[in-house]
Image 1 (cartoon, rainbow, N blue to C red):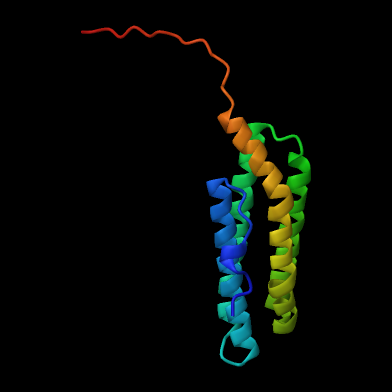
Image 2: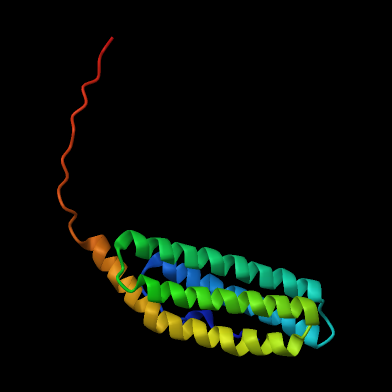
Length: 156
């Protein structure tokens, strides 16, 4: 049972962002499968933690790519978008630590099956869509002419 239908994740029409969102969904689904297996007595806490670590690592890299692009483009609401990323990362770290200490599969299931996918879709449909449009507009705008310097190579 997939938590996130990868075909219905909203697209923002910026390749690196759409790719990151699909991978985030795939990792959410993988973590969800591990949590279900643990709840049913077929899985292990170690497998859950391994998949949680993969989601966490991808989320950090995903956010870093977006944040770097926003900074390069001079995206005005960058601080607001980054603050939301920071909040999500802090929540993810907290839930990961809670699971590591308490092995509470029910709590982790609620987080991974409800909180994370709800946030992901809402964030993509709002902040990421606006960000992608801004980044795409910046990429297609003509760049101002810059002075060039000729370099003379010596032959000899």
